[in-house]
Image (tube, rainbow, N blue to C red; front, side, top):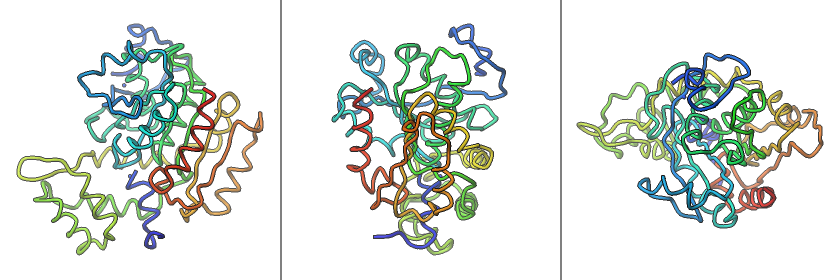
Length: 334
């Protein structure tokens, strides 16, 4: 069943909508090939091993128990959180027990609360690095792959690109998975959604009331209204958003600044890049796809595009098995 008109554009960003590294480099043994104004901080995370979420109280044991396994990092999208990709992470680690998954909450989302400005993709990359360092995921234990949905896919690409261009002691991943991240600027409807939810007084009394308000006063369809209501957390007097709208807006402004095509070309010269698209996402126009297919490929098979015909923007829920089949086949070689 296809989404209502305009929904796909909104879902693309709305559903999915570190201290300065240079100052800590000597402490962590990191060297930089160039200076940067990006600042980062440690992110909230959860480990997933053998299809199960590791309790936070046991996080310190993961390195000793499963240090011989490869690590794949998962990044959610705008206005989401790490739990959005929990199911594919579980299924993947069940089918590929030589891998463990590390799911992160991007800055300003979920349990990764306030982070230092500027809120750029480069800062998001620094956040990931600041998170991996204390976990010992450096040098030969660097993550073998990174996978991001929508905004998370853009950050995953930025991460792989920045690591290639720098001399960190974290190695660039062997594989970068970009899930339905459409290059270019966000659809105007995305900004409309953020403007609408920014105007709602907080705290809201209940999730039901929020859903009703979004449908009746802002013309949100039922699917989006219910999804937005799921992004509330208890607060004094009711509920508030689990994300920071100011940070979300700043991250949105980075979309047009990222040279998506050039980054893919650079990363794919040394590592594999997989771009998974939803066949029912109308934003994948012929011109968008043709521009991606025209990216020079040396070697030819390093950048691969995969279309899941029956999936919309949420490829990891619309066709989970199809996505897993693609990832298992490729990651089984890591």
